[in-house]
Image 1 (cartoon, rainbow, N blue to C red):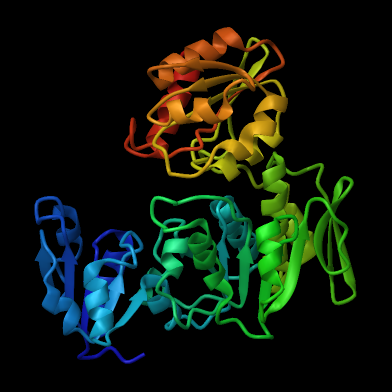
Image 2 (cartoon, rainbow, N blue to C red):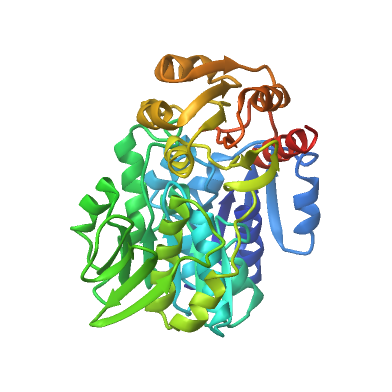
Length: 446
């Protein structure tokens, strides 16, 4: 992709926008970076980009920058129907995402991982599998470091692993992973998409440019994912927690079994540090991605036996008076909470926050069967009680700290207190990490 002398507008100066503006300037493009925040709010960003030849338009967007540019690179936070993007489309301008730009400059085999839940754990684990097998590996995307930081650095690696969100896939056009994994799809981001199907379609774009030589790692147990798998062009590698598979990876008793092209490998799960049924799925997906691209079974098993849970994903906090406390603050949608509830019995569940527009009714059976007490907080509490009422003892708390105190009084020895909100955090906290820190502090203060 030739960028020298091209007029490029970067829309949005969050992390990927900064990476895009810097890389484009390195490549000799004439870069305009535009953001609705003003120079005061973006002081840190301006300092970071101070050495680059970039024109800034801050506190506003100018239509001419979209109508007259050769290329527009859009931050994932900007919805596709933004009026200025429609202006650019009408003028015949190319619009791409940061991952699309990055992929055009990456030569190493790329593993791209998406799904409503489990992306970060699976991406991190896949990266660690490659490293444990001796491959120089870059891990980035939605997980933290922008994918574009790799070509910007000039480094050469043997494997690339990227967590990819639905937002990042929206403006992809040639993005083609060697291995693409779709972990699951449940309702999420309905405040951004016009319908659930639109969200599903965005996720499925991860497979769009794959060919017969590529691999699609898909969840055989997820009805929506498996239905979509029938139309994919890549070689299907299903994973299943429930079914034995002739080709793919699955759980059989106390083992994970990988079968591919007549070869079978078995991995005992007894030594795994990652706990919970959702993590068995994450492990199988990561193992499939790794084994397909050269990882050895022995080195991979050794890594699995020492890999621990990531922060804010079903993280054990402490045990007090026979009650175990788990922090799952990153469970910001119903599908993620369902996986957490499947992992325990005798649960006191702390849930609620900013409503994301999806239905809570898919949790009804699990709440009825496994939740003894449901403590609701935040803006979504009323709607959650309407949809989950009558299934469990329901309490209300004004603050997270009050909810933790209530949970300690309600939960009997042998039970579990679980923060798994099913909502975003922005009504009460800066982000899910602050929510997690406040929960952990409250639990440790008991």
